[in-house]
Image 1 (cartoon, rainbow, N blue to C red):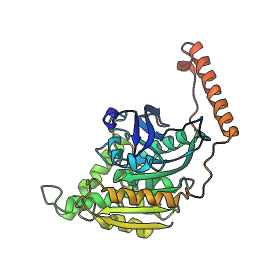
Image 2: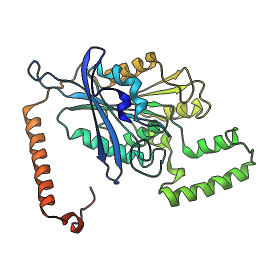
Image 3: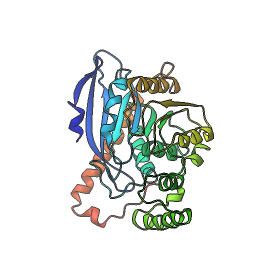
Image 4: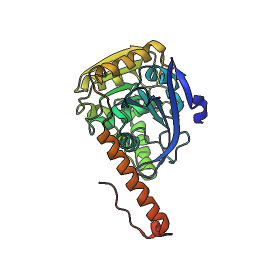
Length: 317
């Protein structure tokens, strides 16, 4: 529950901030439970400004509350935070988790939503485990994203599955040929039920086509996803990059020192000291016009009664 974040109006190291909880409908029809943290602006005392936004992407079997330990570090530097429950997790809709495959499409919807706002500055992505994979599968198709933190990604899902089967994560040790057979059956079953191919989730291949600044982290005691996975993705990454082994395992909460290090990376990579983040009157006017058009369209649909049932809405381009 988002109420676990605390009050919706609060102070973050002396900076007044607020949180808005809402639901966002994605392109593929999934309803995402979202929370958007922003520094408050005093419109009577200072010019309106855009805020850089970090989108946090949580790991498998987790939810957006995972971002709680980075809220203050970001807001105190006047950087907004957007987090959401991935499809099939937390309070979001969806039946299956796809370990990055469908999640990248949901991320695209989130980024599209943020960019509609005249108060949205440069966007960065901060993902852990499945969230790091999601970011890696996405950024090669959206070079306008400013920077990325990938914490504990796997190199490929097929490699991880084989290592888990061979390395004692299952109770019954199997010969190599049997593991290959079981994985082939699992692959077909997942394709039939969840609509994605395990073999195609290969973050390293996307890293080879990605150029935005990136910082890679991995817990030195991680026995679930071996640090060599993220090291291999890092080695393949085409853009400016940094790599750090940190204390702890796969699900260890990152220390305040590590969080501050990552926030500092985003400040440098997004060039916040050099960027003009003023909101222009033209941008505000365009946003107001779009909002009015959307409201008018919604009113027309409402007046048509069951018009939505008869209307064929084309898919987004």
